[in-house]
Amino acid sequence: MGSSEMKGVKLRAKRASGSSAAERSAYFARREAAKVLRCVLQGDARRRATASIKSLVYSPSVRNKKATFALVCQTLKFLPVLKNVLAATSLLSTKWKKQAELMYITAYDVLFGLKVGMIGSIEKFLISHKTSLQSALSNICANSQAKNVDRLVLDNRPHVVPKPRYVRVNTLKIDIDFARRELERIAIVKEDDIVPDILVLPGRSDLHRHHMVLDGSIFLQGKASTMVAAALNPKPGWKVLDACAAPGNKTAHLAALLKGTGEIIACEINKKRLECLKDTISRSGAHNVKILNRDFLDINARDSPFSQGSCYSFRPFLLWLWNLCRKTRLFAPIVLPRCSYHR
Image (cartoon, rainbow, N blue to C red; front, side, top):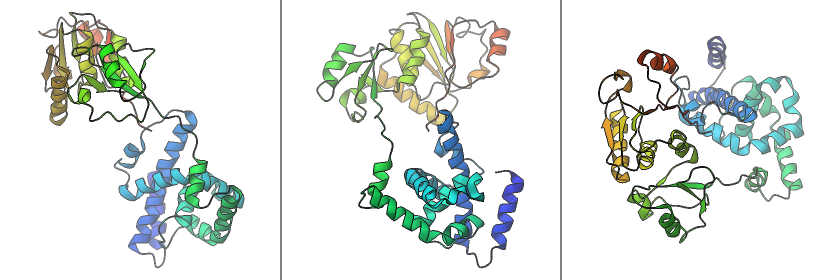
């Protein structure tokens, strides 16, 4: 929604006769939620999420973050049902079709949300058809043999295969066979087909309080995260610069692959994240990691201890990376993983 469009929305809201502060707040929250929902659905359609729901909601442009977040999450939960209800009533084929996301959000509020008086054209349109919406919902429940709406929502949820739980074995402390035998006491354990030092468990395995997690013998680490160090595949004795090291899982993995040899220079500019990095490295038992609380951009690659670097692990997207390499003649192996977005 552009700035001029938003100004128009604000002006119409202010002119709405008899509207309370709660009604105006709900009015804007629905439109902010519709904007977020559109980004989410477009990402799903392209199978490429642009950002997580939280990052979209907590952007500076969203004012009522709590209400917006709740509306998006609840609408997504009821979305298959809402689509069926709107299809049954043919309301989405009207002039509001181009504002489908706002129709979904508002339909959720009309059918399931808080009983707050509504202002706005779409709100008035759907309220005027509330009886037909409720009738369509009842018919869908009856045809689906669902006892209630909650059951209908569960029945319409897409079948999702649970994601497995990935565990990286910290070979600085234990070997993979020992870790596997220990974990097989509580779950079925498989070896990963790509990364040699990670094990795969059922997704619902709760290992957060497991003694091997607490003492750093194993790390609960996503497969994508473990592939960074595996892709670099550092050889014992290498010197590695980890540019944005916190929270330290990849750094600790590098240390394990180096088998305690060489040196890792782990840079972290944020002091709070630095403490997390220190804790991770301490639990891992790695003694070849030098932690620096500084911006790696301030590092002169020609100065000791950076001049003899064997490889470099840069975390964020750095558009000027090629210029950095060209200017400093820093042509060592580099891994540049993209920061992941939670959908």
